[in-house]
Length: 56
Picture (cartoon, rainbow, N blue to C red):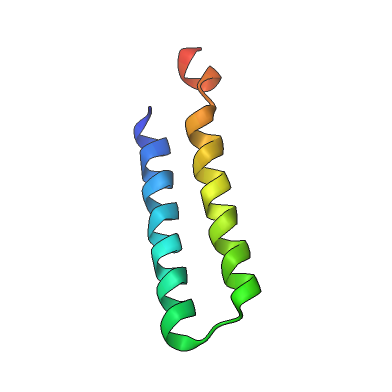
């Protein structure tokens, strides 16, 4: 995995953590919080599953 992909995954994990903290402590909209967290999870899964770019 390239350094750029690792950086993107780390940034997504940080956003997931911050979004979760915001939802728990500041009473954000639950639907939008879940949607944001799922978006970041699918981004991470998409980056890790995209192995064709690394092999070329």
